[in-house]
Image (cartoon, rainbow, N blue to C red; front, side, top):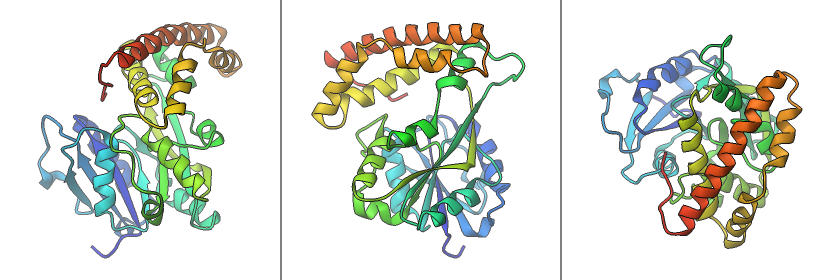
Length: 290
């Protein structure tokens, strides 16, 4: 394979059952297959599929250090593309995903980071669970993240040269490493743009336990990593009632009043989970990986 223009990077930890769907989505891209590569980084899964089952434009790498950011760093070191496109094993890139992401980068002059849209969908569109409604309403609001100066790696395009300038992901983190990278890139003078046309679809979380796992992981990233003053700020903010989130939910007119009230109740329960997790972390418990 000649040198690709784009390297698609996907860390995997015990979610190999989801990879065939992702690979099928990548095979259906409007961007030519000959011009991108797929780097899959296993992050210590219990079982691995046969390498022979991967397409010729994919490579399987391994990372023994736990954490998706450590895994992404392994792929960055092996990537041959001028642009690195990040997504996750449970995402479904739409056919124009790569082409639209590159177009956004070109329009920005080629030095910015481009964060694509993430659309969360329920398993059954006509009958979402309360937790799926929560995730659809609040799960991954990439546009809002970009307005705040960061983005997440479920859909993020980064010029390869940026990593040589600002460094790799913080491999010690289990959450928030993407936001940390974006902030460092922006501080170094790179732009961060929202690319609405570059879309990945993400399945909504269907159960309470799934939301709890995510909330704990995010709280671990906020409290256990980053500058001291930022971490202290998150300690304080954790105790503050999520009034701003309630306000966003109650204004979401595309959902019924019943759904909005349910989401407010779920958010209130998760606020209690976050407080308890923060107290556990401050008393010495290790942050959760998943």
